[in-house]
Image (cartoon, rainbow, N blue to C red; front, top):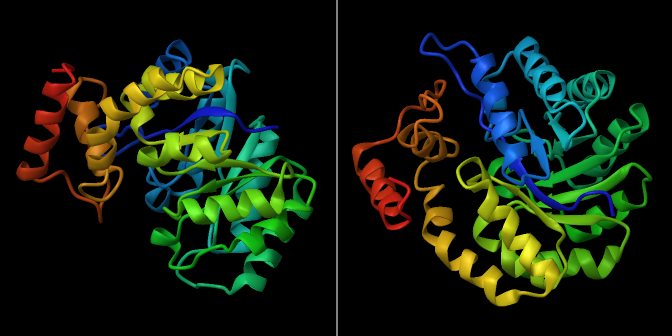
Length: 292
């Protein structure tokens, strides 16, 4: 087992002028280390990777690796719909000391399943670093099938899959086919506990940006056999988890982090700040959780 526990899908903090807030980024890394997060995944969708320049993307990975200093895992976002570009990001992640990479299925150009296999094979063959596949049909417009994941699990350095299809049946099919060849990690906060119950090993979490200890404790209690305590936190976070996608991620999570005084909440176009209606919904949830 290579991937296990609570990994945060880290937001990218921006200054008011739109530049990356490097000081705040380092603060967030330490916040997670102090609050039970098992690993940090920068430069994913939650980190607004589509709007980062290559230089910014690489700089963020370098900062996170430098600040973590080996204390927890760093799973660097390194995916692209260009295989060549994904290899470039993956090589950089290895060179600067990331523990693994998160590699999303190619988006927009919608390859078939054979294309998926060849894409990830090319990355794995080019760079000897542990790879977590990322299946998120809502972003890529294409589902990576359990059979495709099984084929990819035969490659030595493909160690896990972040599964965000929203289908527990698909998760069960992956686990049935792959057995212990690959670690299945939840990509959906509301499905963390159900996925653990069928054999997933953890999560790459949006909500962990806000409540890292609670997300981590769901997994901790589940692994200890204290299902009642895990269920209690699951129910406590359920409305918050649901509403992390009340608007396009990461708009809601950044808005909540601003309400809690962690960052300024700025996002890059084409994303825009949260609507008043959604903001009120989130504020009411935070009040019920006694966070504000």
